[in-house]
Length: 243
Image (cartoon, rainbow, N blue to C red; front, side, top):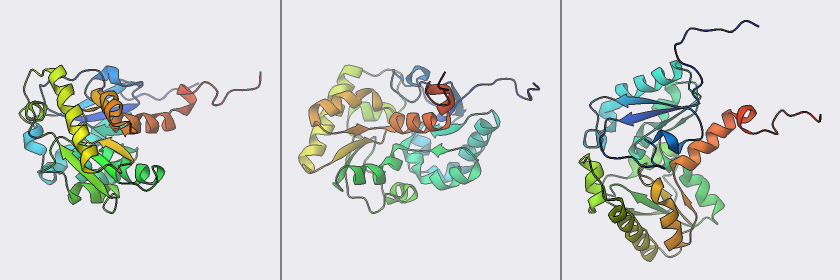
């Protein structure tokens, strides 16, 4: 059997385009490699921190597109990002490469709206003042009824935006829980909650505990797509014989 080479490294399923940050990323965060069940390769957007990119995604198009192309050339089978606001670039990124691209958990909105009885969807975001139609439209969610609560006025939100090196995660947990409570109080008829911010999945269990609602985040969507492209290697019964 002849095997084709040409690269230095092999075996990556997931490629993550990540901002250049210094705040801690605990297990569950997109930027923690142990979060993933698949081999992951990161591409850091040097010099682009949260302040540089939030609300200015269109100015960073070429850097992000080039990062996606580099990850594809490295052999990844799925590409995602470390900032949900990059949903604005979903269409450009998906066209730029030939592998599946998941810019944001906001891609889940049309799906969960339909599977949760056509009820409104709650969104917990890093910054509710930024999140808008320019992010919802590219992911097909412009018509989905949503209720949005942001963390911009919390210590966690400020730490993420200002790229602080230390975060009190117990305090952050309480802030996220309180935000989730406000979300349900504002819209009691919510069918589920989507965590827009890629730093929020570590708190997904806490949000579900206090709201009693299904809670979805980027890791759920990425894992689903990665399993879809790696069925033969991850699901033991796929391709199995009767012997």
